Length: 173
Image 1 (cartoon, helix red, strand yellow):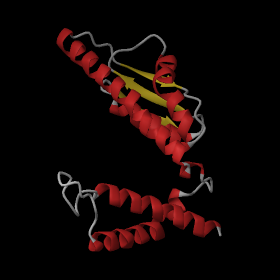
Image 2 (cartoon, helix red, strand yellow):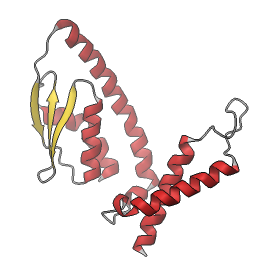
Image 3 (cartoon, rainbow, N blue to C red):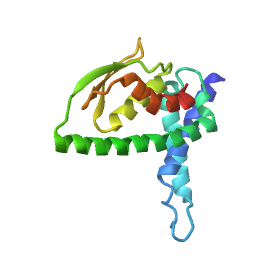
Image 4 (cartoon, rainbow, N blue to C red):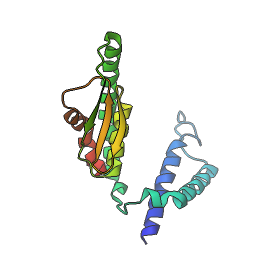
């Protein structure tokens, strides 16, 4: 029963992603028709079945289906707003640092207190997407991240926690 639940969850996710990526392939958005052709739907189901058969044991490794909650997906979409804001701020900061030459690079260690692999992975990717920072290493055992910063700040743990961890904890933990 658990294997079927894993397969079904992976299938639905793969089909949703495929249909989202091919959203306008069947009609014109201008004309108000955003439908998929029958061939597109059949192909999407076929691809989703293959993806589910091959990866369901990887995607649902923890046997915890909390990420199937639509509320968590909504919070994850809302998380894109503060992430985008921080990316814009970091772009301006990087432009200032490049023009003025005020660069003090350092590698810092932060302990974000996230318990899941998903949370740590999303945090590491969010940090790397933000200009001026790069996640260099992740210590799985201690849940620590080593980050290269172009300009060392006062308290890296507080800055990262204030920006990303609170949001990530809402949907990934």
